[in-house]
Amino acid sequence: MSSPASGASAHGNQRFDLTAFLESRTKLVNKALDTFLPRETARPATIHQAMRYSLFAGGKRMRPALTIGAAEACGGRLADALPAACAVECLHTYSLIHDDLPAMDNDDFRRGKPTNHKVYGEGIAILAGDALLTQAFEIIAQAKARPRYSHQDMVLELARTGGSLQLIAGQVADLEAEGKKIEAEHLKYIHERKTSALLCCSVRLGGMSANCTPAQLAALTDFGYNVGLAFQIIDDILDVTQTSEQLGKTAGKDTSAQKATYPSIVGLEKSRRLAKQLTDAAFAALRIFKGRAPALEALAQYLLVREK
Amino acid sequence: MSSPASGASAHGNQRFDLTAFLESRTKLVNKALDTFLPRETARPATIHQAMRYSLFAGGKRMRPALTIGAAEACGGRLADALPAACAVECLHTYSLIHDDLPAMDNDDFRRGKPTNHKVYGEGIAILAGDALLTQAFEIIAQAKARPRYSHQDMVLELARTGGSLQLIAGQVADLEAEGKKIEAEHLKYIHERKTSALLCCSVRLGGMSANCTPAQLAALTDFGYNVGLAFQIIDDILDVTQTSEQLGKTAGKDTSAQKATYPSIVGLEKSRRLAKQLTDAAFAALRIFKGRAPALEALAQYLLVREK
Image (cartoon, rainbow over all chains, first blue to last red; front, side):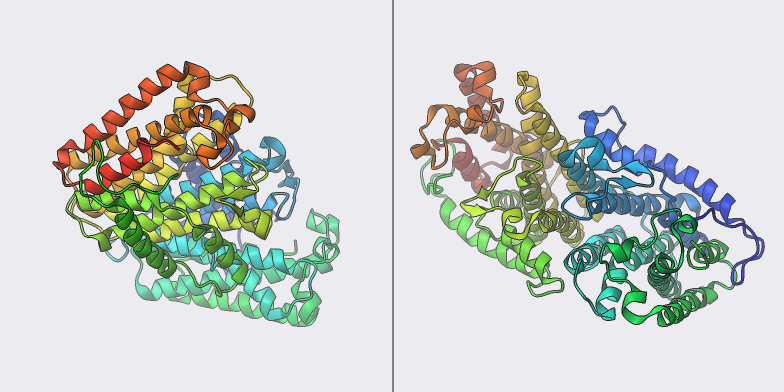
């Protein structure tokens, strides 16, 4: 991903400074994560070092930013959104650690750094993922209950998103699709679960932390879903159309890994049309906030209107 | 483990039929687990088959039995204890699947059946563990809140037990101790976290489901802790003193695997004395229930007063 552009955009608030927003919110999220997690020296030190290695590996904190952006759009307080923001980031990081394992995608590097199992070994990497997943629930249970949303609602939201019908279903379907010819419906199923599910959950938990109305929650769900799916299709398109230099990573990686992509299944033209439709739908979902969701607009702009 | 003996015991209720108790409660727990989990055919079928393979692999359901026994001791209703009973069993099963992985203990068989990764492959086994861990939180969030215990209390109880300072800490310390000479304190640290933590949590959640008093909760905590540690020391003793035939599994396995055991560190005599002290403490903790904890007494009798 490139640096988030500040300023003017086709859809977004003209004056919203996304770079400043991400910077300030990331700082707060990092501080909160540091407080929620056991110290690096807590016994046994290895596991806490491994958890923190991946959690503080320079991720962009897009999901926490979405959570906070959604909370602010619904008139909530930033402090109330922090537990949810940290919980989704722990869940996200656990899924990356496990996805990178030799038995899964077998990746040696992530964000330019050796993956967790390359540094700590497979056993500890599996346990670090387990620990971050468990930590996510310990954190979300500490979020403030709201008049419309109980602790139960928030824990269930996170558990169902992370469970065998959503996030894990996506990873399983992805594993099983490798090297096979799949239909567009199947690829959509994977993207919805591997990406959209947690983006939905991120904005929904943000809304809940702000005691959002049912209509706002529905709009956030719609927004998260469309942003997630559009983001994946755009990723697929860029993988085909851009050179490695433009992308900042190996182009054509999906093709060479025999991973099914939207362009390879429905063609480039239709992929572009789909991405456009989903992007429009994402922005349309925000209309209910009447301009009071500048962070979400800017984040969608950043994630979906990009050239790398 | 042998078949639970019915009838007379040194400590237990003279007429409590543990076999009948375990049989009837296991049936209910299995039915509840079947209802909580997605169908075996739910997409993607592989993950749901893998989850159910290990969850219904013939485990004795000792932890759910402890949960239900604790709830009944506190005057609670069995139905109210079922979500907690199912949640601890899902957490326990996830930990077994991950512990058996090649990167951990590398076990090919458990309870006479091939381990999860031998049947489904490592990738799916890791994900099946992840899914059961997540499922545990989805289930505990559905337990009924009680006047003294909120959803938040119950989720935190499970999360802290399963987290990097307890269950996962035990597994990490165990991995790191392999082949090394360790002190008795270190072995105690491992057993407390690998075994006592979840037994404590099992009875505590049972008590919570029955809206137990703070004094009852403290007694259950004490009971779970002592049962867990005593159980492990007795396991170590039996591994040294019994033949394989008597045990029904390979004797001396710990010694040959260079695993530290109580007898190898503090000697057989002191191990026996410790086990006796802890067993007595476990039964003493139940005094507060004035004979209304027959299931817990019988379970402790079964787990701690045994010859294999």
